[in-house]
Length: 459
Image 1: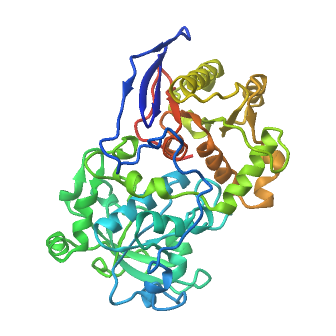
Image 2: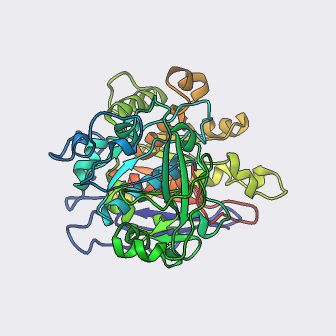
Image 3: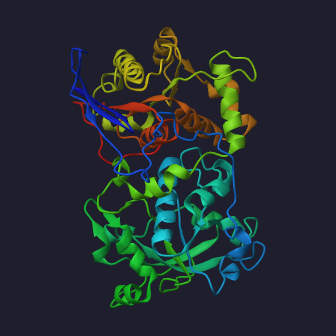
């Protein structure tokens, strides 16, 4: 039996798709905002929340020059101000997971009164032939600073990305709580960082290999730092083999993916503080949105400048999820296209009944890493649109990052959404559809024997 969760800012419905493809819907549960200050995705008037076209803005006093000594320097440490404390981390877990890690880091910076220094995205999922990609090139960083009322800078603001002088840093390791070695990252090489790690204290633990924001935030204050360092011994750095205690001016971590306020996998919950206070405000860069809209118009057969209709976006992940399918054929593991069509119809019906929004049955855009032409032929037979990035030569025109970026933007632009259970790319897309567009969507479970992995994965 496949399970779908239909969610919106004001509606939660559980949909059960049985083995004979019939659909059973439970009684709706209505969710209300406890106060006007809580963002619930749809304004009091019933109109959608602010859309992708919200202009950029810079908040006075939050520009980069207030938090660095000068232009990008030879080393990160050369540009640290004595009157400012910072926080940073390293990335290498797939783009969506890395986005979530960055958001967690920014929220942790806010709770520990430290300026976040954003690392670039590492091209783990798109191929290491690609270059690192800076946060401000895909997201509207001035708008994010203004929305959350907090300063944020990037590694490239501190250290010249074209230089090769090595920073030797002492950092904290969350990974060492459950593993023999600190978390690895390609960024150690591309950012020229040689890091000696100290394990974070056991008191920072949450269940399922997670850590709490406040358990980590206290490491940035004198009492918590002193207590955490008692009886600990740093792991030697990989290159110089030096043992360094964690730097106090720039509090750095090997990974901040598995972090929550009170629960593990908190991004799956509507109370997720990292999403509510940071992630929802990380909108895509206006230039990127313009490019995504060009691709959308072509997919829907629209003329240049023509209004894009409201549509349902889909993310159907197969690819590396085959490893969860057991010994049977992958096609027996994936959700059938016929069931995906039922999910789309459920979303269309709910948009009409709950929000009064009508979406054409052919205004559906599918994104997927599936390579089987037979599968895509089934999508074409339904009249649904999709982008063939190979045919469009997207990677050749821009870079290997862009097919992923364009797909993610398309997923977020729908008024309805159908995603893949267990994929963080689907999870984040659904949150964006709900918060940014006032929309709703479903997550379709799948798997051998209807198994879906608990740990969500990027892409």
